Every structure is written in structure tokens, then in C-alpha cells.
Image (cartoon, rainbow, N blue to C red; front, side):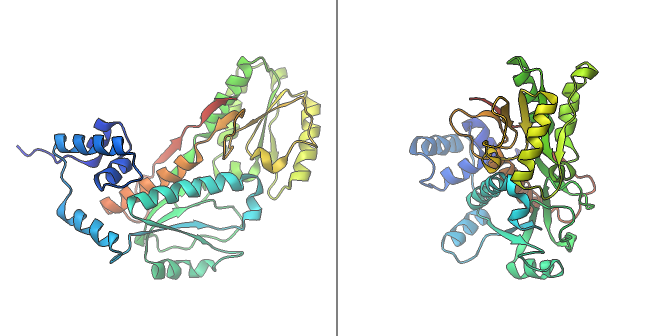
Length: 334
């Protein structure tokens, strides 16, 4: 009988830590606290974990900078001005992905196609020159540069961007869960006039999942109690949105607004001060914040973790059956 080899995941489960922490601890990395490092090493020894000789040699070569780790290309198709209300969220997702990539020995490089970046038709040649083996399709916006790739060359994951015709594995925030949780929490606090304000662009990119969660909650209400969501158009600036929000809030007598933009982008001076503002995508949760922490960095980590696994298993190109990974946000009581 062949006994399966002990893996990093086995050690991680026994130690109660992430497998990337195990990888660092077994290499003696000082970024892992000494007690955790020693505990992981003892558990690995007890379980009989042994680093494969080839992997051990690769680690040493990387340490000596004789070779560079695999390159993950993070691709977007728009200038940052096009996503003003979610720049902080986007940056947190990217930073989370970069941190895990570095931990795993990968190099994560961002590429922008179209306006302010490289030509879409030059993307594939650029990625080959960079030595990219993995691609993460980041925030893509309909109507901007189209993605042109030799799909079979790469291990591919996308973050949101559900409107793209190519069917690939996807990592996303669980917007249905997040809206329903926020709605439920505000209802329990006595709010009965709860509205949803969401970007039409984000809804198109995520299969209207904010709207789906909101309509599920409204299904239990009387028709007269239901409030039509406010979906603001592509390219709406903060001044235009503030004016539209004020009119919508007054018209429907709202006491709570669930919204999909970072609250610091819009500001408060031009808005009614009697409404509770509940963010669904706050990138940095501050003391006193009440709303959903979407776990943006975790979304980036999951994207990197997925392409790394695809690379290890040799799965390149478009999968026969694409799967979606949803990261549930956490409610912050403030």
C-alpha cells in the first residue's frame, strides 16, 4: 500500500494556519513570528513532511537570484479615472494578490491595455517578452479595449468581468450575500426605508448580483414598501451622483442607503444627513465604520492562489467547466 506524501496543506491544517505561512516557516522566514515558526516546524517534523529535492533546489536558486519566479500578469483595460468610486477597492484587491504572489515566489506585474497603456493587439507579444505564464484579468470595463490573448498559453483567472465572452475561472466578492447581510442588519436596527445605489458598470461586470440580493430581500415586503434601486450610469462623476442621490433619497424617504462606492470618494456635504450610509465595498475599514468589509485583499489572494494551482496542475487555456469562487464580506457593527 502506497502512503500519500504529507503536503503543505496537511501541515497547515494541523497547525491552524494558511499554507503560505507553512511555506515561509519551513524556510525560516523572519516574517513569521518565532513561536508560529517553531510550532509549524515541529508539526511538519511530526507528520513526516519532507520538501521535494527539486523544490528545495528551486528555492535555493531563487534565493540566489539565479532564476526568477513565474510571472503573473494582472491585466486591466481602462484608465483609473474610469473607476473613480472604486479605486481604493481595486488597489486593495491588487495589493492582496501581490502580497501572496511574493510569498509563493511569483512576480505579479500589472499591465494596462488601451488608453494610457499598450495596444490590445500587442498584449500577447508583451506578455511573452515578460515571461508571463499566468494571467489574472482584473477590472475590465465594457466598451474599452478588447482582450486579445493566445488563451492556450496561459493559466487564466478573472476577477468579476463576467461580461467577457471567454469562459474562465472567476473570483469575485459575494455581492448577493453582502447586500442581503447589510439589508438584514439595517432592518434589525429598525430601518424600514432601505435603498440600494449601485453602479451600472459594476452590475454589468458582475451579472447584477447587487440587484439580485436586494430584490431577494424586497420579495418579503409589501409592494408599497419596495423601493426601486438607483443604478447610476457609466462615467458618472461624484457631483452628478450626489445630486441624483439627494433627489432619490427625498423622493422615497430613505433612512438607509446601501451603496457600492467608497464613501470617501463621494463625501457627505451635498447629501442629506439623516440617512445612514452603508458601504458594500469599503477598501479600508476604519474605527466606527458600519457596513460590509468586502475582504478585498482576500479576493486578490484567491485569484493568485487559483492561477498558482492551475500552473502546478498544468491547466492552461479555457477550461471545459469554469468555476466561480465567491468571497463573503464581513459585517462591521461600527
